[in-house]
Length: 470
Ligand code: URP
Ligand code: ZN
Ligand code: ZN
Image (cartoon, rainbow, N blue to C red; front, top):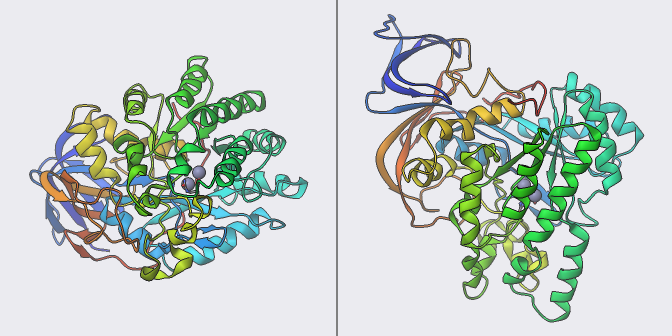
């Protein structure tokens, strides 16, 4: 591979902010310095641009099954979209089916993803069937397969939900081997009662999704998850935290010194529950779990991000088309046209995370530029065992780099994004900040609107221990 030289950019990491050149050889950063020169190098002028470590999105669902539905992004389309948004690594999901071993679950998912992925990747292993044999596999999964995070659901009874005993057993096993459990924290059984009541009363429209998933039940499950983890002596990571009441439990645990962590997502920071008041089926676009909360919740989430009670901003990119015609019923929200409880849960976001957080976080003065890098790249890398290969601009790190124009404005729209999904949560929103060039291990894969990457060029990342941040 030829040498690559990035000249004169303002290098911003989680702690640094300075202007220098970066010399890349064989996919890694070889030198950082002033006035670097290298004959035969591909030179990229980054004057006036910010240089970030590539974004790491630790919560995406590409080609994920959801009952009769399937995410409309493949590993190819979803990772191209991610790359255009400045993300160079995703941690997606391997979905265990009942009866399957952990090893088979991972092998099958790698076989599906590997020929398609355009950026680097790993998986959290979703466990739905926790038995002795599966538990016995987990040390090897962590230490040899390099998968150190396990996702479990406290919601979606009869589909994905596991009981507290399964969570406790898994936590105790993985905690001893450098693993962490990620929880979708909502009280699934109470929510099921509310769903049944809503349907009995004829409330079938998308807004019922909001009304049946109260913040209190997110808080209850978050508290329970953290307490079980405390007993099991394992780090715990709450995914897609949306409710201030749930955040209180995380804060309380962290104040006691426990390794309790949480992520939130851009839609909980920038959108609110008024989206469920759209007429007709339009609101189905916003049927993700947890639902969007009141705008009064935003301030608590931003405070959490500032004070490190929330450590990561991930997207929970889980796209389904709004129109059946786009890709077919299976890939569409229309499965729930007559019943909100059948609407596939999830929304797109993998392409807009960096620009939204830059525009609405950094430019609006809510977080610093260093904190922006910490939340989108460095903390995810540390939390999930990818650091310092990823999440850093340092000698020896992978040359996953984003050249970012802090002054260019753009309008977010499904017309111009790269995901297969046929809508944007942020349609028409003007943001300042733009991803100009993206390098994956030194290879230029995005240049303006041009895609230069290749399907299958992403590499599976064996990860170290999870949850050992700070
Ligand atoms: O709505 C969401 N979050 N969809 C993905 C499924 C889940 O809850 O993780
Ligand atoms: Zn979830
Ligand atoms: Zn999710």
